[in-house]
Image (cartoon, rainbow, N blue to C red; front, side, top):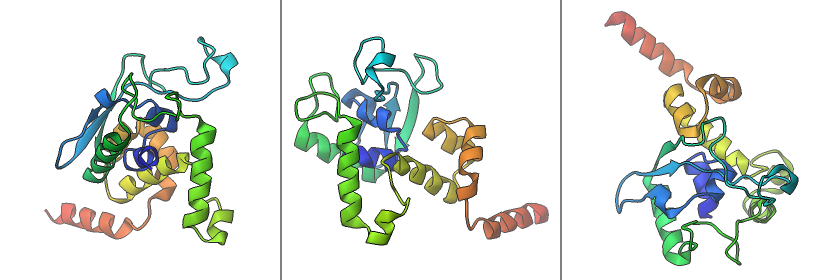
Length: 192
């Protein structure tokens, strides 16, 4: 659950969530926390990695190898992560999410859990639809929520690890119900 919560509340890519370590987390007892994302562990074909491991640790997508991305996280995710760490601990290397044997969680494992959860939570018609078909869709839902809440595009892009141009090209179509708010802001500016 906490892995999926990171994708939804912090808009983490699956590889970023899998790579999350305790030292990347600021989880205060109250209020907002922060994740400092600096690695990703995407799953790829072993032939495409230098180590021969399917989960080679890499830098952030479209960023320099030393770049980091601070992501403010709401109290809900802080609580979920604190509970997860209390219940399951961390790996010797500080990783929060790991397989039963202590290794990296395979995408097939968390995708299977996701499909089972969808079947339990959604109606049969919804399960047959593209609604939340993949765990990655949680990231899309987070970015869409932030944009629809009126968070500025540059702030959303920074939190999600996008450029503003990519953000607007991919997500502009999800913004809905903002015309009344925009009209009021323009009217207020014109009369100020």
